[in-house]
Length: 454
Length: 140
Image (cartoon, rainbow over all chains, first blue to last red; front, side, top):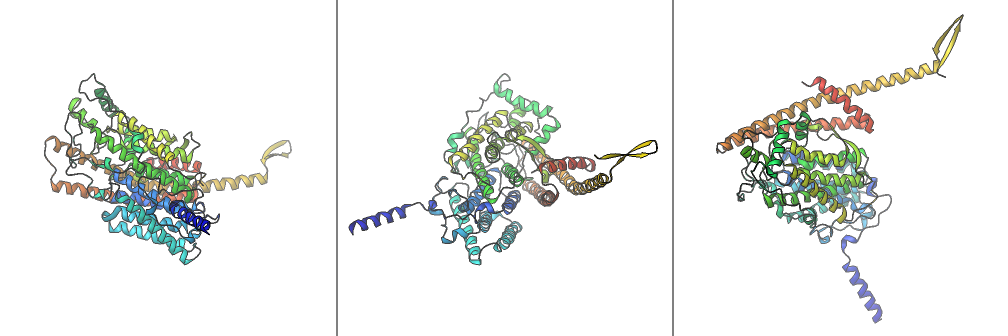
């Protein structure tokens, strides 16, 4: 009798200690995420781009963060329908399983479209917060309702539809709670710190924009990356030592910017504008890369299964790329080429496009495009990166298409565009690419992602 | 196989066999029909793309004017006035909304056309080329 008692106690203890994120419900072959279309999720990503453009305070770091939260939320909403998939709880920095709602006995019947739709709608409502306009809030509500009404017909019962909806909402609330402590919560309210004191020195950043005399998000380096290890993987070497001597390396890299802007071709100027992703025209560099991902997923007829994994990978990598890049920017506070050139080479120098209000080293565009490169190579090629494609994402903004033979060519053109525009030294771009690749690779490696996606 | 000879006295005339003539006519008809559909699609999208291109040029022009005015003020150590800031914000807001509305329309039309008529990569690339040509023609 005693033995039975000890056995039962031991079993109960083991049972109660099993992390909840490991309790994955049985997946029936008839209700897997791969059986759902991803079209509605692509529409949500397009809407997020629209929200970033129209909501005040969403500059590149804030935009990368909301795209990251959307990626995590969509994955958490749908992973239970993916064979072999694990929750991101316990895998992301500080994201504990206790925070997430648990699937119940009906989980095998959940409608993954309803869960994902409700989750993504809610995380967008929450993460754009008080700055969301009434019109854009209406767009979210309408899209959520249209999708729900369509999916409700496909759910096995009204109860399942309602439970699916509730699970989605609860997941979004949990991800939002997690995000509140990451350092970027409501950062859209004060993107330009009033209290930050710019370090002073000949090599230091000085304002390049009359409207923003303090730099953008100087404390973004304190934000919590979704993968703690990303900071150590990606740290670049020091920039070339500053000097005003015409024989110095620093002068030479500045002169290179000057010469390229002065003698640039029409195509180089168009490339500079194509990738500029100015917040008042497009939805920031992250939005551009998400736009390319959406196009690739559509062209390959990816299901909801592949789409949620791809958006999560890219979202996490973009979020961390901006934190890492912003840390380096404010570690060195390096002067922008326009400021150096006007002081030491040509006082009348003008860049092709406006220089954004934050330090030069390293390039945010190069860093974020390189995480895109790594995620796309893993998702769409056998590892060689060869994938001829046409970027049509900027046609909506009046640009032509741009063709690439592979994803490396895409990220390198994005990086070079900053040199053509006079915005960055070449070292900012080259080291940004290396940083982004390191962050991207780590996101693919450090998280247990499901394999063989459809 | 596709051709035959008609013996008419001393003259031999080459003629196309009737079934193949019929097939050729059908193929050519559908080819023309496809071309006509594509021409219409290209015209619709080129019109929107031209508007988007003009709006893009306007955006960059305004951005440059704002930038150059800011540069001059900064060089003279004169801060932007609140009125100037409001004017800039208002201009940006107007252009952002116009760009957003046009972008939504353009994306919707492009997605619908691709979904209906241009499903393969090759078809889309041919469409891209025809579109670029048309935009160059109609867009000043």
